[in-house]
Image (cartoon, rainbow, N blue to C red):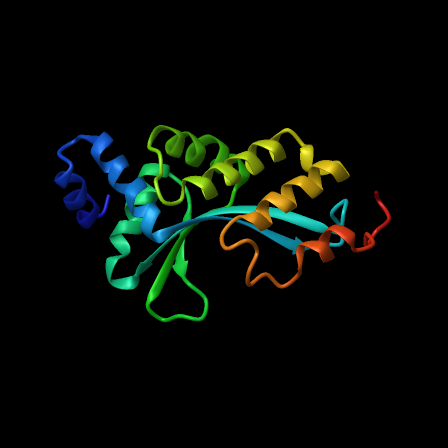
Length: 172
């Protein structure tokens, strides 16, 4: 374990509960729960639903992101595209989201990002139950994803386009 991480952990004096509340609070300010909808012709409806948990931080404070890696025992840290100074900690494995991220935020609840988290959690759990593989379930999850994080602003494709586009591979 890196000495910087040891030093930061010593601030919590072995009280993981405090560390976990700190990390949850940090996500309220610098984190996101997002669900990308990506064109993918091999998927049943021509689109892939891709949930991702992320935390951003200036490169000078990388150790904060390393604390997340330490606690979750997974995830990647990399430079955010288009920037030189911002790092991104990311978990996009559905298994890790289900087994690590969701139980963590169920135990250490968010305040400002509570609504986005609840929608994110619902989508990940529905995907685990394969609900996204039916047209009704797919449409429901995409609609919920578009209601998150500024109601779909900044997305490349409109919700209407995704829901109404003829499927690319006739697997419906």
